[in-house]
Amino acid sequence: MIQFEKALDIVLNSLQFTLPKERTNINDSLGRILAEDVRSDMNMPPFDKSAMDGFTCRREDIDNELEIIEIIPAGKVPEKRIGKNQCAKIMTGAIVPEGADCVIMVEHTEVTGDNTIQFAFDYTNNNICYFAEDIKKDDLVLQKGIEIKPQHIAVMASVGYTEPLVSKQPRIGIISTGDELVEPSVFPGKSQIRNSNGYQLIAQVKRAGAIPVYIGIAEDSEEVTFTTISKALRENDVVLLTGGISMGDFDFIPEVMVKAGIDIKFRSLAVKPGKPTIFGTYSKNKFIFGLPGNPVSSYTQFELLARPLMLKLMGCSEPIADVKLPMGSEYIRRKSARKSFIPVTISGGKVYPVEYHGSAHIHSYVFANGITSIEIGKEKLETGELVDVRQI
Image (cartoon, rainbow, N blue to C red; front, side, top):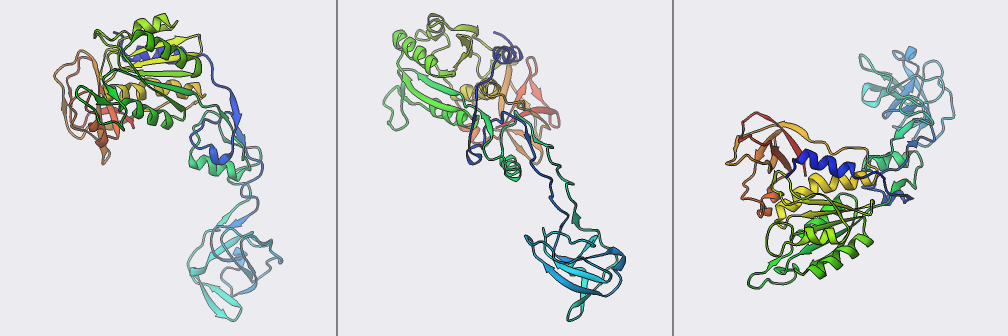
């Protein structure tokens, strides 16, 4: 067994390249990894603009009765210059006319005549968004390596960057093993169970921004498993295989991997759940994870090991960051020989363990929105103790 931190280093250091790049439409870029820096093609704002609905005038005239000489809606170029004791009615986002240097809020004015108003408040800010105060032309607005989120799409749209360069999405082959497995549409017979791992991994792969390729259930046969793994490696960038990797009579996956030309980097972790986790490389540019058959184990080790590899493969520069939060209640475990990962819920800024019966209890994760860890040799997390939480 190797410790988790060592395993993560092995996984990430095994990758010495990133995938090729491609252009995509801005509407299809959500969740993709940006592959080049983005710079603004213009100043923002492109002119002095009003920050609110009101009246724009010269501050030096603010205590005087003001004549309204123009109405300026957003999208219209002002036709008149503001002179002494003059103002223009202006809408949010409209160009501030020449001569004016402040905008008075509508609710801070009184109507004094058919075409005049008076400032009726103690003080006003300028209420102007000034030319280029947010972004100057050629300023860097987005850095390559980020995962594109809705706010990034808004920025890209604002600078006319409508065909972003992104990393290609890796193809992730997903294989479930075991003669006891049937597809979810089948009612299981005696000694059978539905294949939840495969569909869980499809969803996790999609959430990681990659392309899942569900290969199906491989029977417990060395010949079939060898053929399935070999084909999956040829056609995909990463292969995820669940089951068949512990110490049972039919758990021959490690030997089949070696036969298929896979260089196994590790085959056992000092963690719980997920001890029988295998990682290997193939032909220097393909990767395979042998994940445990228990659903919590496969879920957890995908999030902790496989997902970081996929993000790095796509050139993501943002590491998956844990957050430090205090425990809202204590947690005690009976055995401490391995590092443990437990499902938790974050509520009110504190962390609470959820009811958890072990690595087959995937239903516990329905109530969890995070995973926290307990180090080797540690048996208890105290109330108020700061812990690292991976949000899920």
